[in-house]
Image (cartoon, rainbow, N blue to C red; front, side, top):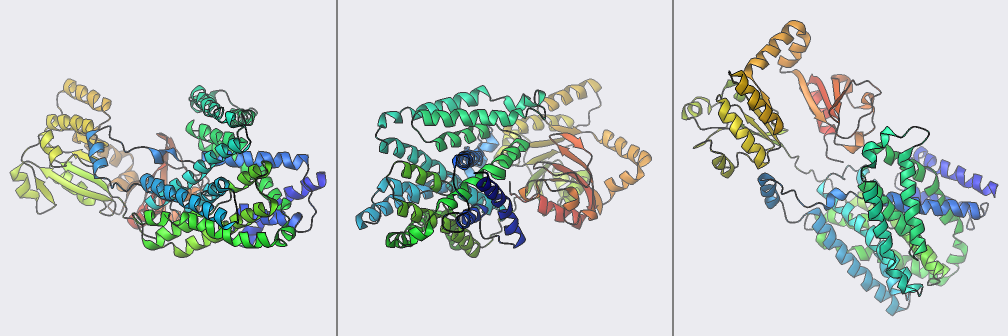
Length: 619
């Protein structure tokens, strides 16, 4: 017993190392672990024997696999467009009706229809008689593999990646629910089907009970307690045991547990620890032992298996093929086809589904092996065909809209110095004299009035940043409050008020409305003080070649990267990192997190290069 445990543990350790050592990137680690299990088990050297200990660890592996799959779901993709403000509502109206959610839902709907038709065809032809089981298996998608490929190609934050991710989520959730219903009906105790609703009810209760857990748990936890991990296992064990008690499948409880923990919004550190527990130890046992149990000589001695493997493999692809016609609404022919190939990968849910079918005695060993081997082949062929057909399509980088109201040398100069690569700029005035004076220096627009309704009608408030640089403080103040009410994300106001009491009142109202403000007097005093106290810093502020820049980390590729590992980081100086509004003094070993705001200076070329890398949308 102990010998087999040691062998599997070493195999789990060595497999990813060998893949990295020989640079084998086209084989997913999970598939490689199944191959290793085949070598160690009945089909190979036969040096590993399954026993109670290995079976228990393997069961925990599949439970954690489905739990972590539930945690992979990005629920923000299911949110409706924000219409809480007039600006947000107008932007939602102008958004294309072909959203990732709509396209993914329609595409998966066709996949379900295709899966059912293929299952009926298999029954009519006499190859496989269980229509329900075949429909479930043909419609599954390996969410974990889809996510890893999209991350590797920096596509998760793009429309293409979001659409395929949503399709994969549906390809895991819908078959899992179908498997639960199928198991209840096939077991002959359909009365337990309604009891399955108890699992969802308990999941909701756990979500409500612990909804504020991750905002306060740091007050109570310590290295020897790890309360976040203990909570995760409380939820997992509660829902898994409840699922088995009411006659449902434990994988459904595990998947719901992952959804509950995800909705509780744990910190990144918690997710990493759970990944470490699952993928670091238990999950590899599940895949390796799956390979150990396979008896390939017996399978290949069967003419039925040899016929079914290519047929099932083709069916997995054909089931997803109708999605191509929906993907074409958003993507090119080549990329729509590559999306179909990636979506045909199916291993995560195939294994537990086959275990359920074997326990119900509705599938024989040859058929189960054929499904499993064809599923493994999809995980090899799918990513390879995806890479071959996918043609990078550079989505136009959305520029930050900046609108100025009020014209003067300061506003004109500031606008001209903003990079046209990252900013879309416009400046407005209602003063004919100012227009005649400055229109040849900038793309200046003349307004009939500064009435807020007139500005809304002319889409002056339809911007990311509104700079109110009018000389009249009252006009700026009034427009700032109306712009925030309309929904402008950032409003920056010039506020030159002589009366201290009036200025204080205005500042309080602006702070409450989350409007940023400045006065020319304060700016000039600050600049003069910097020139006296910190001449080097003053040079940075006033230089047009080396100036302060703020870069936000949104590219998941650089998450957890040390600053010293950034490309060409020696060409810039990173003076501060703002994380959750708290300043951090950076060092070479400081690791970046998504959402970090880096304050840096350097040549314009070096800063722009880093900005393009770090701000790539790959969250």
